[in-house]
Amino acid sequence: MLVPRCEFACKFTALGSVVSPLLFNVLLRSYGFAGEMNGLALCLVFITPITYAFLAKSNTKIQLLVDVKGDVDSPHRLLIIKLWISYGTAVAAGLIAIGHATGIARANELSDWWVLLAPVIIASFNMIGSLIGGTLADKLPIRYVLVLIPAFSCAALFMLAVFEGA
Image 1 (tube, rainbow, N blue to C red):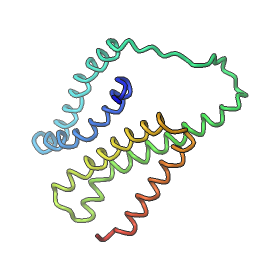
Image 2 (spheres, rainbow, N blue to C red; image 1 turned 60 degrees about the horizontal axis):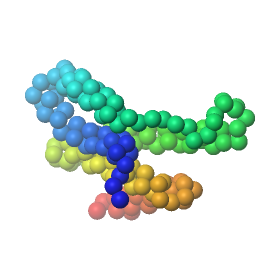
Image 3 (tube, rainbow, N blue to C red; image 1 turned 30 degrees about the vertical axis):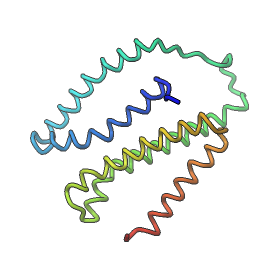
């Protein structure tokens, strides 16, 4: 089954975090910090109209499945707040991991090539995990997904702890 266009577009944006460290490393080495920031600005100027064109062409309409009247006492309100908090903290943890990848690689005295690839590898697995998580959420009851994803994270952290020196 093909991934729906909208979901594919959302997940495909993670590819930028895979490719950008390579591009920005070249800009930083060739033109310094100012050149790298100008490169980032040019990427945003270039990507914004493309994103707008894709959204306009998609004719995507946002429609609520239920009539929401802003009921503050809704029994689902607390659950929604908890889900947004868990999502926000998970995103923050991912950004922290990607942001510190080069520092961790340098602290472990890896070569410059591996220092450059560290955020690329983490971002790649982040992208793959997002695709798998979205697919699982579409195929399985959400309660299973909310248990499976942290279980996978725990297993990965356990393997990192056990195989640290390997």
